[in-house]
Each structure stands twice: as structure tokens, then as C-alpha cells.
Amino acid sequence: GDSVTQMEGPVTLSEEAFLTINCTYTATGYPSLFWYVQYPGEGLQLLLKATKADDKGSNKGFEATYRKETTSFHLEKGSVQVSDSAVYFCALSDLGNYGQNFVFGPGTRLSVLP
Amino acid sequence: EPEVTQTPSHQVTQMGQEVILRCVPISNHLYFYWYRQILGQKVEFLVSFYNNEISEKSEIFDDQFSVERPDGSNFTLKIRSTKLEDSAMYFCASSDEGQNYNEQFFGPGTRLTVL
Image (cartoon, rainbow over all chains, first blue to last red; front, side, top):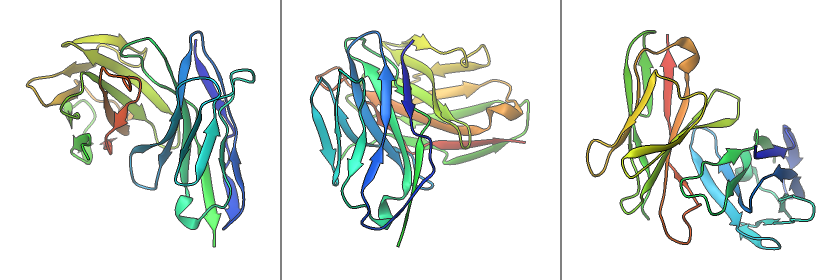
């Protein structure tokens, strides 16, 4: 079945450091790929998405590019802030399957220190 | 901006009791989902619902669980006889049938604590 693997962390960075959180996937179809973020005490929020190969999703300074050849969707940010401290989940959804549930990665906890 | 809402935010119950978790999906959405996240673990799919019936469910969604859309706005998850291991954060999500149908919008979650 479909699966998502991501670096488990925790990741601890200083403010303004460069962030990369790796995500790779396996899927039988042609999935859409997502990054969700969960701030402390809150629910899941969509951070960015990409629906086809070579698409780049971006939001709030975060970027991720859908790489079909390497089945990856790594999350990057050039300069993190303390407010970026959260848990980040990579997820996929198989395109073409109505009602298809998401498959989530295990989440990566990011702590940004001032 | 439309959002998914869930009530209550925190539910405490005794083992063996029934609980109903409530969700109000985004109004024009047609697909509804429940997920759970045991503390410190990954988010797990429970069930998807479309056209007044379950379209897919996971192994977790056994006979103790049921879902219902009792009216035009609410979507509920019922656990008939709660167990300690049901303690988790439960997230409701919804999606539409348009171009972004595979993007799911999540509610803030209900934290269920079973004592």
C-alpha cells in the first residue's frame, strides 16, 4: 500500500538557520503531495501542496518540489523563525480516487531556538 | 474563510461509556473523514464518508465505531464502549468534489481521554 517516510527528528535549529525535512513516498497511483503543520495544542493546517511532478508548493517561506524520479517531497525554508516550531507532517493522497484517505508520515518535530 | 469545526475540544469519559464526537464540515463539501492521533504518534485514517455511506474504513474502525450525518451540517463519530486505548486526538476533515477534491481541510480536533 501507499506509504510516506520522513525524517523523524526532533530537529533543533537556531533562528535564521536553513531547514530541510526529508520526505519520500511510495504510491501505486499518481498521488498529490502535501505538507501539514501542527502547532502546539492545535489541529492540522495545510502548509503547501503539489499535485503533479515538478510542481513546487510554497507558503510562508516554505517550499517543496514534487520529484517523481526520486519519489520525494522535501520541505525547505531558508531562514526559520521561533514561530515555526511545530510538528510537520508529509502526506499523500492518490489522485483520481474520490474520498481517498490521506496517508501521513510519522511527523517531524521542529524546535527553533532564539 | 470557511473552516471545519469540532466539539467538544476535550472529552473525558469512563471506560465502557459511549461518546459522540461532533464535527461541522465546510458547508459545500461532500466528503467527510475522521482521523485519530494517539499522543506522540502519527495521524491515522479511520473512515471516509460520502453520499450518506462509508466509502472506506481502516482496520482501526471496528464495530465499536460508527459515523453518521444526522442532518445537513453535522458529521458525528460514535464510540459505543470506550477503551483506554481510544484515548487520542480525533480530527475531522472534509473535502469538495472540485479540482481540489483531494485537499482535505481539518478541524482543530477533539481530545478524548478515557479513564
